[in-house]
Length: 264
Image (cartoon, rainbow, N blue to C red; front, side):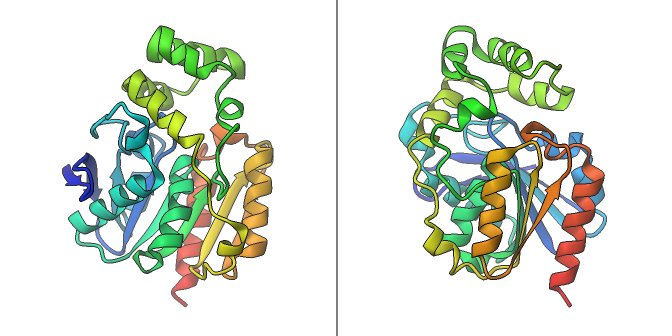
């Protein structure tokens, strides 16, 4: 386990390394933490052939949790990823991001393409998430965080989905600071995303994955694949947004095959 520090504001980002080989960095989604990758089996599988780096986004997990909206601008989030890559000595890395982690990946690719060998977006979008956060979680998520903290957020999300949230996701959510998460979500609503014209310039090999029951991210991923010159889209049958990474086996097979194909 180690720490990296954003050069702009000094925020500490906690990360972990395992395995050996080409570096692959795994970036979780909103409200989660790096523990999700180990809990779902990604770290164990990938460390057999990669130097796996997992990190906690600012406001999440073991990283610093500032509580002002401006602390969560996309430029700062991208800077956090770059700080971690520098800390582990990786000039460039493969990148796998889920949901918000994928959204950050699009911005990293647009601003620092030389740091990304391949990009995999799982349930991600290049667009602004404005208006989408309620569809991913539930209407009134901000009020739930304000009035009842993480336990109330988890209770209402479980009620909205009609099912129990898996133990790995529940543990990650309950470890969060509700004030920091509210600030993170509010700033996310103001981020503009990547213009479609800019996607046409992104020539990094890209794999786009989204569930067939995740209509917004499915549509955005298909569109990105049409626009990006070296991108391919694969649907995940029967999966909604929360199930994008579960079960891990099919996703891991797609990711490892994709990375292997770019070396040929």
